[in-house]
Length: 82
Image (cartoon, rainbow, N blue to C red; front, top):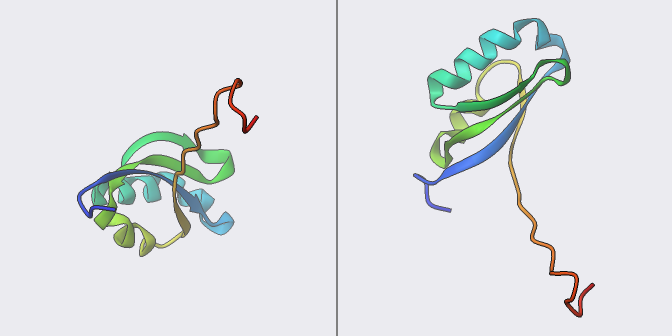
């Protein structure tokens, strides 16, 4: 992975910080996160950011996990693997 590569990530917010959800979103945006979804009830933020900024996100108080999204490609139905 290239450090300037833009990656899709999911950020988990700890339950005790859910009341500060909007402030945490703002802190993430200040680091460079482009938010695509805010799942307030679940405590999740989904967005895109440069790979070299992930460590900065992990330092924000209230964030319990930062996971890079993974994509899967299933073989076509006519494939021998199906």
